[in-house]
Image (cartoon, rainbow, N blue to C red):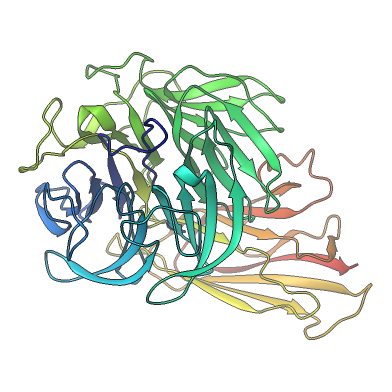
Length: 488
């Protein structure tokens, strides 16, 4: 899944184009693949070579605020899609989300747009300061429509517009800053001083009170990494709520329904540019190599921080940086203002794999699906071919037991590590207790969830999701996972 970033500014009754930056991570900064950075104040989205710090592609004319060809107003978020296009939330004044097909080293063609350029509103095909965008696996687009206090899921109609198929309505007293659709169909949202997970009906499933959270992402381990000015936190959600944490970036292991243990953090809680200090971190992501990428807004930089000391409380060393502290500019290795968003675009950079089925079975006619994992690097990657089948197939009646089999085969030359298979119990069925097994192949562990959030295997009644975790799958290794359900 490719995730969006989010930028937000508060003004008197409106968003204002403030100092911020967004980074869409196409791979680890310490690798040879590029980074996509939203350089808001410079009115541009740039693709940067992390080794040379050179700009290899740019959309938007540096410092030019406009609506014409190759012009942006206040870009707040940019995400590189699997087809090579770039999805951009162009907020204040332009009030639009655009999908750009890059051309050469500069510019591109707008192939889709939602929102009418220069028109703010809440009517058909209208937005009011969109500050976050995510392309979903089903092809729809999730948009944080900030000044309309809503999150929209739009089914695109090319080349412009689309249908709203889902909507979450916030409150006028709390700013909406970020939204991410999770694998179980719930949505992770930064709203006001809270990070929350809401169901498809808008019901709050989990919340955590902070100071000023601007970004949240769910990690492979089920924890949530949060940028909470001026620090970053990682927390493991348990129960339905958490405790209050001062401004910082930390990893928290919650206990019960409130409070928790901080297991990792970066930032002292005091804004600054010194050792272990941040100045308005807009976004943070955990990289496949275990490091954490942070968009350190008002320090005009994106940094990659080592987390080798994890889970101690000491800050890691900075192993890579784009931008220069205290220098706002548009020259070589300079960023115009705060860095806003950092995104992990390609899972498996260090051969880590996550396979997620999202209610792929459509009872009573289950859908057989196939999924292939192909990382960009290293040179000898694993290629995990995964297929899901069901028996009996075809139309079935109430009371019939269905057995699902997930078969995998590593046809690549590298070893896949930390492999996690996640599947949702199909709607209209009941999980058969004890039927989830690792039938063949390498051994691993099985965890259950009743809400798609907490895989603790204790409160998982009724079971709604299953997760199989396998430490390693070597070249040529295959296996099968199974579980059964009964049609209601």
